[in-house]
Image (cartoon, rainbow, N blue to C red; front, top):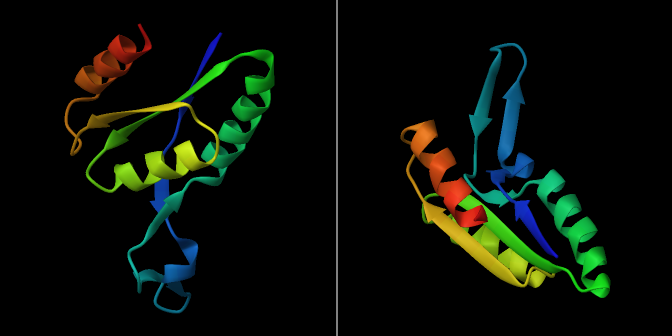
Length: 102
């Protein structure tokens, strides 16, 4: 059995400041971390490895996504797939993900 885990990065909340009076959010430090839901999905998938499952992490994005995939590998993923993209057409990206799944 193969388990595909989609992982993504989010801005580190420790690098944000909220000014309620000005109703603005300021980014003091632009650092990205692995999304907490992605961490939970990797943990759940890694639990299935004992039953013989292969865990594959996949992510779409620019150069910084490599860090997220490296962390996914450190958290127990067997392989990682990186679809390089700087945005673009969602249909094209969806087709690339579908091709990776096949």
